[in-house]
Length: 555
Image (cartoon, rainbow, N blue to C red; front, top):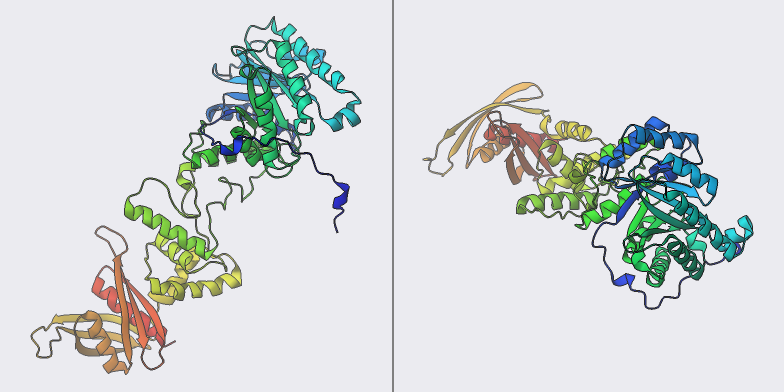
């Protein structure tokens, strides 16, 4: 048994009058990408300067207005990257870059050297405040830890006097989730007070889940408690920076927004230390799926995937929400059937608002396509196979035929695994369209004989082969299908009954073809099967379908 007794519960927040559960997300927060700092430092092979510039340009392209670009005081490559952005005039006037620095004077001085010439900048200072780190890492009490933050704020304030651009201070009590709330509040209020924060000159107070330590509702309680108890809430832009240690960073960020957060720091696809940062694209697409403008240009998720994978050298998981290769794919037969019916219902109704079972958003809104929606394997059902035949090839199989053909594909799937659409179509041709032995229809001549006394109105002269031997038969019926049935009963001695017939056009234009489907019962063996015929002539397609069904019955 796992030694669970080694671990103790992390305290929850006493907040009986919490308000966030009654709130709804109404608009997008301020997004801040930390891909180039938090994300980059977690890479096995960090990005080089040109890769960082390419990634930065992409973040600007999709609409990020705040981008943390690194730790220029701690790394020459990050310093050089920042200077490249400045010297090559790559920072738009409406984009604010963010630089991270510890509360140490020489590092803050170096940081200010790096940001000269930038129009808009956030200087992000931090120090760890958690109970555990105060004890085992710093061996400091609360007042000593708070003094680090005060000193850092004063140094930024001092060097900011000689900075020509617009500067905003950001402060993070690192390991906020492991810090007593009253102490976190005290140190944050002290920073705001020291800086001289106001409604006109706000401070970004960033409350990171540096380590995710509890359920998302507890993080929301912490955020709401802080938001309600700040000394001067109007002077604060409340930011969150969730990590994903418990796998709930997206939920934690969304609940934090309900609890009063104004801003979210995260990365594309959740890259970051350990299990990663919060995935900004995930949250943005979640908002989009609820009819909320995410304020990011995310219509081409494939482009995001391409630059992320190339620059970070990390693949996007195939089950990643919205971006994974298989997220708009259904293997389950019941899912496939529901998707099929949902897409058809929308088309039949001319409905603009998206509502399809199992697909919370239209893949085309993300630059994805419908082709990969349905995948066929041994777990797939009749609806999935029918959907592939309709979507890929235009064959609208009669409902009664769904199971018959799905059973054929099931055998292949059990043998080889996933079955590609082309394989399904090849099997459809072999089983139905090309089923021309032993009986093969060659040609037929129809005459209208409606004046006969027995009321039969169609005479058919049928030419066909049986095991390669050509034969001719004549008979009459109340239509072409009945006439061909009568011919075969007389010439071949079969005892069959036509149970159902459907037809439809396969395509439009001068070369249009029709597909005909016959459901046939062998009156002697009670075997029932379908036959399929295609031709530019619907009568010929119908006759071919009868032959197809009879050949299948005789197997």
